[in-house]
Image 1 (cartoon, rainbow, N blue to C red):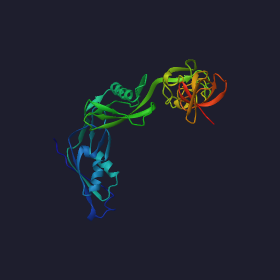
Image 2 (image 1 turned 90 degrees about the vertical axis):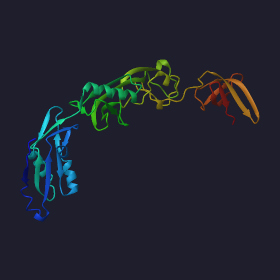
Image 3 (image 1 turned 180 degrees about the vertical axis):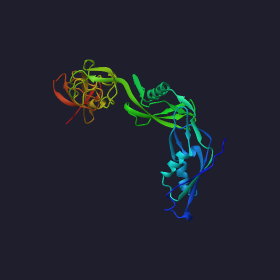
Image 4 (image 1 turned 60 degrees about the horizontal axis):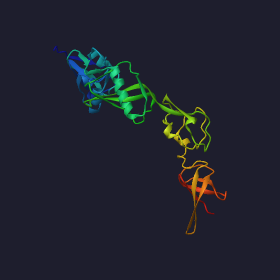
Length: 315
């Protein structure tokens, strides 16, 4: 390896800094360097020594720009000199170069194909959204990524939404590298919508709703996905025709429907009286409804105990 020693004088600094405090930056260039990240630093291509420890650390981390995915990049002393000067390092008087005349840098690792990356992101999304019918993922990166190992893990953020532009961390199998990628996401799942206007206290039947597979959006993220979730449920909030049905618009399962025959139970002190009645309203456990005594035709208020029993409210 050909040895090259050079020394650059930083003009203009001598007038601002006393010669007693003039400091020299030593940069010993490496001949050939293999890195696994896309962004190159001065510490990657050279041994850096500077009397001020804090600035030595800063200079080691000085960015030299990005590396191409393929091929190599040549870093010269002139390029390093120009980048260091722009930092305005206090007390810096000289930059002394030694080692190789230039540093040749190339990317190491294994390229990950775009299709492979999209497939792995889809697998992670299926675990996060098991009810999805279909998942569409389109990477927004212009090119693939390079990792130290062919194995990697997709880490989804906890706050990831099932639509729009999202991001995920791609972590190399050996844990030495992590890269965030952005992708356009569409997740399709069943959505229950109303066929007609549904009013408060109405019980939902099969003819009242329909199910279709749709992309998840802000409107449909929390909607019911199956008929089992809505059939037989009372409506708590008016649902317009075509609107998605959300759980918060529904009450609990109806235990007693209008017209059902129920057992009316009345307690007077220690005496319990039972008779047969007909429900004149409907509701779920704990709801108050009107029931009619079959024999006397008298109507009273009662509380639903179960699907066949109403406890009469004694005033």
